[in-house]
Image (cartoon, rainbow over all chains, first blue to last red; front, top):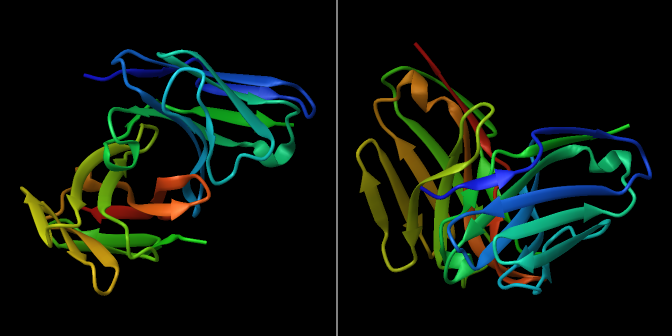
Length: 114
Length: 114
């Protein structure tokens, strides 16, 4: 069974802090994603990566960056956290053609920015 | 831009009744339509998906139908049980800023009353 692990379940940060959200998958998947989940808005794609050191912007990349130095690890970085980035963040991975393959999600990190 | 609309946002049914959730999409080139179920406090998980070359797919009590002409697809759950209570997300591959990506609907909270 695919395991996608997010380093923190809950996180509280102050406005202006730099925040790192870490995600690791154990199934050698090529593709990794970061989504943001807000009530009524579904899951919105922030960034994705289809290979090591490759990254592509999703629908809402502003205020975020990512890093993929190793195949199994995909990090989401909030350069200067703001209150409107308070949300649930979900990491996911998939294999093959990423727009037609099942996503395997982590348990999520609930981030609160005060 | 391209998007996916999902209705209703909440749905309450009696145990044993059927539940139907509908989604519409805007990109006529969309070719992959998965459905994810997210139980309270858990990660979203794929429950069924359909590709554009078929009109219907069934898996025990759940089925998905696709009408490419009208650009809508639906999830049908028969003989609902309390464990079906969850948030359900539809998704479709849409061509947006990031190329061909999975875009999610806003979610439907299904409550099955015993």
